Image (cartoon, rainbow, N blue to C red; front, side, top):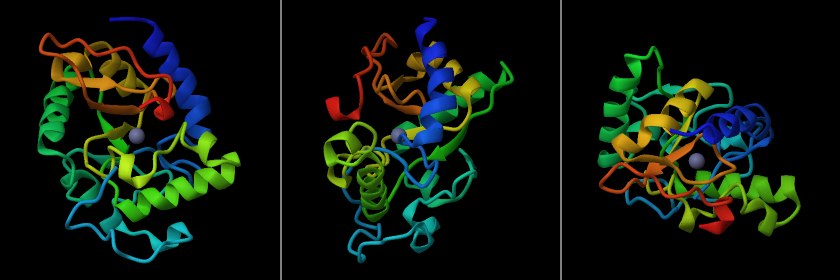
Length: 197
Ligand SMILES: [Zn+2]
């Protein structure tokens, strides 16, 4: 569909993902949400990633999950998003592109941890919010966002994801996709960063 997303994806994947962003890289992960009734949202605040577990949607740095994996990061995703990803993955497989995730659903306390880490890393809540949303604003906490693991899958989704409803939402997060396309499969222009929306 356009060249910009590919270049953005490759640059972002190699640079921004390594820094932090909304993926769980370098101990700082991503963006966005509100709580799910079945999540551990009322637990005490956590200070280290060792307090996080699979039930928080936590995926250790360097790991990734498949869309078929039976883990909360995947199974707590919004059913419409899961369906869209499954359909897109089936089409992408014909192009030898496999979808894997470094992040999906997250508990509110996991999101809070990520935000707190970002504030420490970036020096202010304002700058942190360019990369990581607070729990009550995060689409990950709602199960309405995923972070794609590989550049080829990001590129495929940027070209064809709209046909399945899937859109890159933030210009500075090439890995982050949500349902966002209109009925004709057209995605809105990406927002500058997560502080814009
Ligand atoms: Zn994300």
